[in-house]
Amino acid sequence: MSLLLPYLMLAAGGILLGGTWSFFRQKKPLWTVIVLAVLAVLCIAVALWRINQG
Image (cartoon, rainbow, N blue to C red; front, side):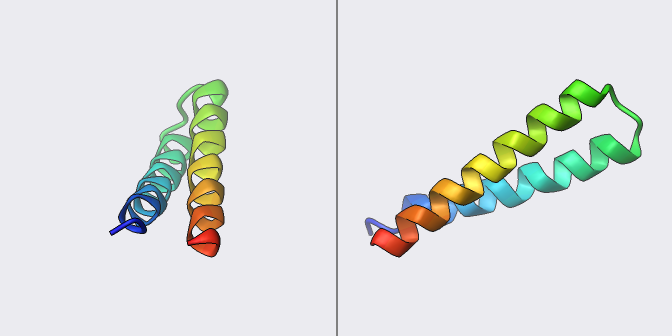
């Protein structure tokens, strides 16, 4: 049960990464693409770190 949150964060990071790609393809402002990419990588990194600890 304690590993549920990291896997949900991993899924959220993947969704954010897909949103980043979508924003990039739609020619949205560059700062929004960068912010989404940073959030996605942060979510994925934290999730993988927590999974490895668990």
